[in-house]
Image (cartoon, rainbow, N blue to C red; front, side, top):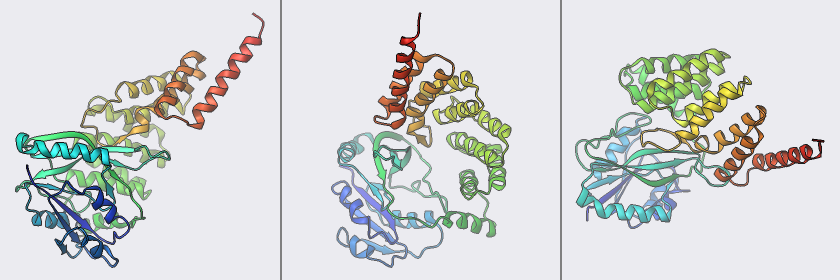
Length: 365
């Protein structure tokens, strides 16, 4: 059977590291822990799981740290996790089954689903594919000081096995922006993906004008991943909303149609633009498209689960109610309830539809 090296970079992770390593027990043939400057019990906890613990001075470069960790792995495949990641038991069973096929199928890269963020009922809020298991070879190299990535190469598998990201502590909100600004100060040109994430980072810090300029520059490039460009259109629209320019926001959203079949997230954003202006027939069209396109193609980038089911259904309920099509409205409310059981909105809508039926039943024919 192919051997697997788990290669992690950590810093001050005493609260979550044991949870992570316990969840991956039995899958990795060796565990590599690279500490970038912990001042808590992280190294002590790691020592309970492996003797291969290394120090790497933090350089403001995540790719450099991860590449150092990868350089220490000796398995046939290199596997990475963050300290606040967890592999649920049922997903571990799938992962073990996958491991048994590596020798026979020989994929170069295995991409798994990453669930980051959860709602009040523990359902994933955002899900996307990440390169997770890579053949140990010269192409398995991390790129990017921030939002680092290994560009998939060779034979790529995409498997619906979920790694869950459960953040337990607040991170430095300005760290990413400082890393990007250091790159600018050092005269280091942005690759396409870095420019995309720099624009997003500016948006998160409410620097809407600067963010819009970076995102437009990214969209004008001939390189860059299609899923990033589609998402950049949505982020650009949010920048224009922040600048009180709703017309430009719609233009940015419609630009997203350039990048293939519109993802449900984009359809919902366009639907909301029309909904907010009382154009319910137009809004309903786009919410129906969101439902029609809800199945993942495997190249969707960030997938917001609510925008692929519950949100378009509940919005269609409201749209059809406003258009006087109450049976359709009620049907979509029940669909929304199936997508996300127990929501107050669906319960209130049921009461509303019941009252409407009772009132219409008392009126003379």
